[in-house]
Length: 347
Image 1 (cartoon, rainbow, N blue to C red):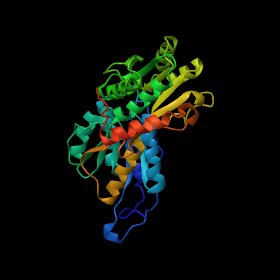
Image 2: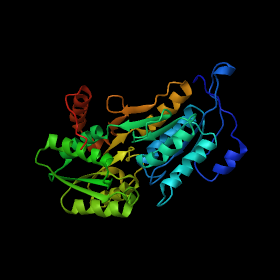
Image 3: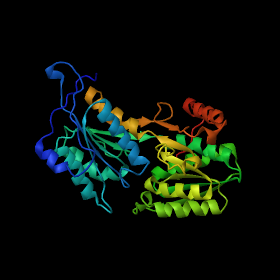
Image 4: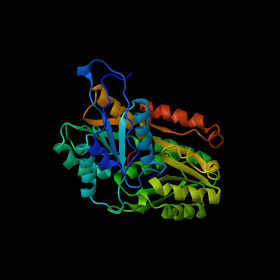
């Protein structure tokens, strides 16, 4: 039983306003004590570019929302981003959730920073969280931040150990400081294993063009080019675009490393053999823990950080035949990072 949480029926107007989007809300009750200790929780979530079904970043957030619905028995609503949308569109989406009684509300991705910075002060009684940003500095906003460079270091080491050609690749969706953390960790991990390894690095788009997170065709073309130029392992931090890179890996019969979610789990039967591992960014854990903390009354404002040390970051082991005995090396490196003996770079 989770204390202090009780669900009430969603107001008819809110249902009508939001009926066109998301996974909808089943009403249920988590147990809890006496009347005065109970409060209403309905959970809203707004997706980043690429949306649900990207098999990566947004799907990790969705997994957390599913866990909220299944384990905490809470009403939930998730809303998709629009193609080429403005900050005003994001503001309207967040306000729609807040006005409709969704509290807490999770904004998935740093692209919501400007919008949430304007919305949060207008709804001081609503608890908000934003993934991958800590610039807002409002008392009702929690920043869900990750040490992406740590997990990327581990999969970089895996790529270098697996490579037979001495050449590997990195495909980034959009060249932002956030994605540069993935690149920096990956390069450092690979060079820890093989200081002479060749690393091809390319980005699909540059800000303010964020289409690189939702362009599988370009993801496929870039990865294929890397395989053609000798890379036999490619790590892709590009959201939905990674699905195209995985197609290229399967076609070339070369190795692919996924990101955020365990992409072996969602790969097709033809693709699974080529998914060596994935860098796990546990947005699902972050979303679930945040919602639970709101219900428990333990929510904190400001930075909440997830890393190897608290299982917010890791690497996937779903394809043991691909990793082989390198897990011994990877787990040793993992412990060295946790202990502070190794500090993967962020840029």
